[in-house]
Length: 253
Image (cartoon, rainbow, N blue to C red; front, top):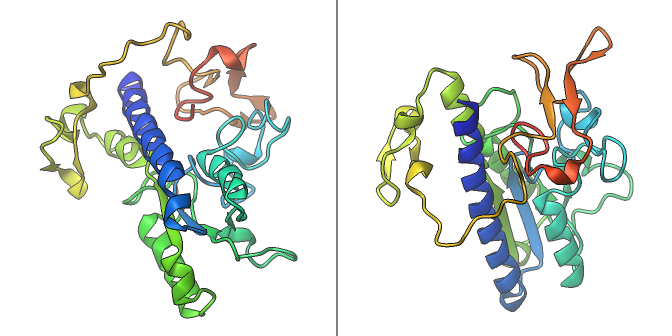
């Protein structure tokens, strides 16, 4: 089950990487100046509450050296988009949660993403994509953005696998997710997907990572996750060399 979940995430990861690359290539030419971000932990830039695992050790160990609210050990995709945005002469979208803080500027869009979310209800109580879009609409109703602002905006959406994880955790099967790529099928919870078992790459693989699916940070006992602490005792272990692992924890590269 764990390897199957990892495989699903890998497929979503590379699909999202491809889509992000297309954004960088076409964005400037189309005059896009306001990015709005929706999705999960792959693009969440600190919208999750301080009680979330992303604000605890060992997240942020490599960069910036302390927990900073990001689930990846370093930058998330929307951080890279922010860097490109700066290169394009515009700012990076601030997290929705921080929009009312002093010196916060919504001039360059907003990031509505929350770690752990999905299209449907997942295993965590964070705003799913529908709620995030509703939050976006509320900002429009407040006339914080003009029609011209919206016409020059672009939406970055990340759904990296939480719906799949929730489906499998609720006694779903990998066979139930989909049978044939290219042939969308309606499944339980209304998910139209394809089965990554049928995805084949024409490019040769790499042997840089000896154990591709084993994360750097992993739980010591089933039922716990990276960052979990009980009675002052860490319920996880961290590898000596983070660069030797593709996955940082059970779901994040």
